[in-house]
Image (cartoon, rainbow, N blue to C red):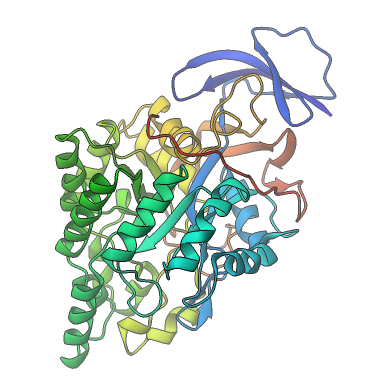
Length: 460
């Protein structure tokens, strides 16, 4: 099957021009003005933006959490991602304490294999680093193509590892060409504040936010940055939310250290005032929580300064009935927020259309940087001859309303209900195949492919 995309305005991280794209099979084989080729299918992209498929390196599909599971499966979650212009996601395998990394990988493969509609890869979350785990690291990187390892500095008893384990893991991961992702919040401090608020009968969603003040993230980010510097291991802080945490990274640059930073779309455009809406605030209970307006300003600036490289989602949806588990106690509300389908359009509308970021920067933080950091570039993350034909065609001027009544995520509310946004994903190709066109999905469950990744470089 061959496809010719004609007359589109092609945007990559470093280019902006009008041309045709010719695709054969799964890859781009030619780019140029007025290409003289015969194609099975012709798409006229006149007046539209043609960009590389989005990459969301932070999602949680079918994830066990707080006695329940996130409500999007690999099928529903990756399909919803495609509708929103995200062609590849990276999910998190969670090692169970006492079990091997391989057993966790087998469990997650059982959920994903044959079910994903879009392409996917994995990070390996290490919750129990010991001599046996240490022996598995090389094989996970070199044989399985999973080159990033997630650690938690919170959730004691379930996910958290201590600093000694962190340093040991960093040394082993660095040796074999991997990278450490970190959830950087001070778990002990948060747990003590949660206990204090519960004892005082302060049980509304607002106290989820007040149990995780900015200092809990700032302190942990500083500690992680220092450990990464000491070990020389590449480090990546996930879902950064606040000024204090970004300043920890900014300060590290003064000693010539490079730390990768990811924020999420919600931290750029939502703020903590939403927690004041009684239990309605449970829709936005996530960790870390939403922050203040000054933090939004810091994160947008960080993107333009090159300190924040990636805008992801931390997509972890729960049905409203699941959120009601915490009706009488904020600490029992499942943490998570649905956004996998909305990220690309929200970032375009709130970022590009409001002159906060350029079109090139938009592509960089929604696709290219994640591809480079996580070893998928140039197959993913750009439009170039030889690259996978993962392509998004967007109408930059079409206005539309976000609503749970229209989205494809398996969740019965929206964190952005009623938002009018400018910019609509019209057509999506995944590895050369028409995936989405005019709000219809044309790829089946099982078309999504696991992406084995290359070793990590700190230079992007």
